[in-house]
Length: 528
Image 1 (cartoon, one colour):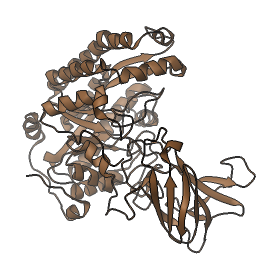
Image 2: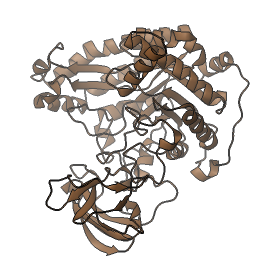
Image 3: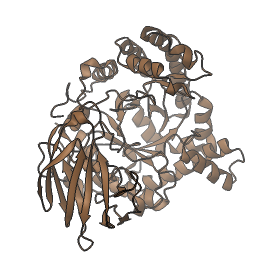
């Protein structure tokens, strides 16, 4: 019989170091490397449509400085403390922040309770108006159909500044315990095998170097540096899911050690810990690739920037695995090396350099079913924009799907040869405009329509079946919930209150997961 584990129950747990050899553990894990569904959760931002917290201020936009008579956002530099709270305001100035910038009424309307410490005055604008106000407490009436709203800090006492602001959704007049999760969010994702925290950790382009740089519970907003590790562990415990952490690319050894200590102490002992060096370090568009390339060249690993990045990824990954392996029981730790689904040479380089595969457990790829339409693609973005939804899906089925399956099969062979598990750090459809194609409105409308077309479901069915047939293990879909735009239609759903039965993508992954013995949450979100 399973049990829910809260943050407080696991604070005192410490785990030893297993004496089982790496080869023995890997052989034992093969029996459990069956396909399983995981998810990439949406990142912290005021436009997040997943609404994971009952306290929506947690994802508020960093403070915007305003001055009477000046253009919007052009107030003086704000005097902030180390946690991001405003210490003082200049005359005729105020600070404000955006919350729930979600169109179409897809977040709860009603009365929001604002609580805060310190002395000052808080007002609101946009979709919210103040209906009650007292020191330390304000009540807002919010009409979600009007879009997002702004919270305005109009006065703050420098001797006792306003801080610890909480903006609680209807139904939450008090903070619901140590971790104010939205019950609808928890219900939606209960039953997943693993939660990948890449976006919640703000991994891409992270500026974290030391443990002191990490996000903490007392931060004004988690939209700056990500959600605290303590809460990510708590979420995995509540959902009884394994946890996948992405180590910031510039993080020092002490950061790695402290994160590993925290996870070992707080994550339920039945849960595995997936550990990966950053995210897509092979991808030139990311700051982490440039960092790895520079470090690799400086260390003499190669003078070729691309090769240097791959080799540094190998070396740094192994260093991270060694640090974590001294703190997290070996049978719990899944050491992940990255690959590029479209190019097996990347995985061969990264797993092969200095024998990195001998210190790892899995190679991870993102086997997207890709249709990236640009002025140079075949078809071009302009040509495809004149197609029908059926034509888009036919191309996805006849061209993109076989290409994705070929990448899966080639990496599965590579992984088997190295004694590694093949897992997917991301995956799903990848229909998007690029290189100017994203600015063709007819194309954007067409691709969004294709994402909600019933014909997409059987393509997903064949895709996931091919993953299972090839011997793939954990598959973390990208992503959970997010609005579909010209930059991509990544979310299985667009909003937390979507009808899952109307989503061909959600239906397909739910069906696949149920066939694997996983029951994903409730059929419909409630209370949002």
